[in-house]
Length: 131
Length: 268
Image (tube, rainbow over the protein chains, first blue to last red):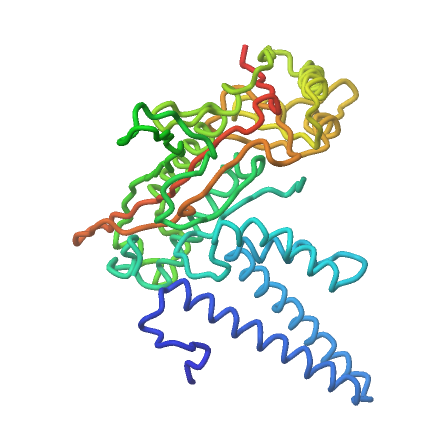
């Protein structure tokens, strides 16, 4: 097995960045698998085979969501942006722009880093009600 | 390597994951202030002060005809809670033990949460922090022993906030004793008191270790400002053959921008 999820020498990376990179790789793999199952299901006519693959694709979606949630818990700013995009009705692009602006405007002014790398526990704000 | 020196600790990667996740698990339910006030940051370990935008007059300037003022800032405060973990327990966890003894970490995490909550809600003079309850110009409302009267007290607090022009939604921080009483109480007809309070507030009710009594506050934003330098992290101090000594650490400042946006509910 290779270690190509690392872009930099692993021994130079902090442990939390290595964990983050692993979960990024896992997220990519789950997304690829979802795409593959979607294609297989589009051409498969055997009902039993379709049922099995449909079930497997559901697992990939679940894993994708778990990976994403892990990564967002480690990146409070991205989590805030994601909260303005995910599970919202309406125009996805508009939500993306608005959520990014709201979350990053103040952060950028303060010169906050937008990327992970801190060795903190990543707790940040725990507020669920937004003004 | 950061100042936390984690790479120097005789702790495996799996061990760090266990410690971090245990700390997160203990801290998150107890960090009440972070559920109710604005959170900015983390701005990093090197962030040392919060800009207040204010100045103080200096006496004479070094040259004639020159006026001078000095910027006022609120320095960030560092909190640190030391704890030790037996190396045998970490080794057991590495072998797959599910019951590693991390009690000292749990205690340190709880104490850190208490300190953060107490500083935010009741202030910390030595650190220059004025707490939400102390800053409030509203007269504190006595909670009393009769839990069934709590909805009335909370409604009264919200009325005071509305009178002061402070809109909602509102949140409620409950000290552990009050929280336990609220949780145990059903009103006439069996309706849980917690649900009744939640309907009045249209906001969260939060278990807040470190808080005396309770505090009702607006969640509209911009009133209570928590500024994080380094968010809570575990660092390495030293070790011997028996134990690894670690610590939980954070740096932050807190300030109240709108004192009238909260009402204290006192015990008694």
